[in-house]
Image 1 (cartoon, rainbow, N blue to C red):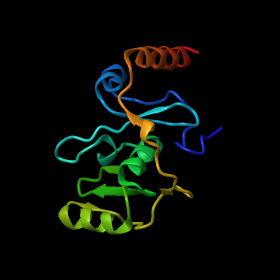
Image 2: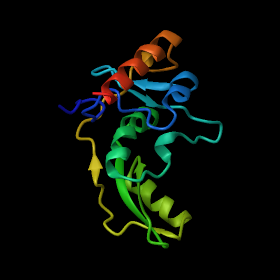
Image 3: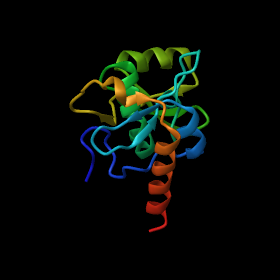
Image 4: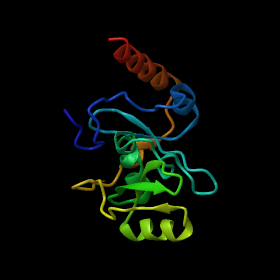
Length: 151
């Protein structure tokens, strides 16, 4: 069943890249419905995981809730094609942000110009949902994540 808050059917699928390091050192969005942690670390240049391109729409969906919590509103996922033929999926807070991104990056285009995913209902994050995890929480989460993968 897909979580109505974080849009995933696997409550331990994230973090994908180096999960232990991410959970220990980055701020997380903690879903209040299923407990899934999503990297919500923002660096001093205002960059965070959800602003980077994703290889698949499914992976982008895993990070859209953190982007919504950071941006404070519903977000959209678009398919971006690079001039070299590679296709990625990116999260934007609005169609205007998509167009601004494309204006800054002439080597990229969005042929469809319609979001492939947009949440139907936005609810703002509670303060306790955006936080660093305790070492005990990290250990429990990783244990649950890796025990699910071995099934």
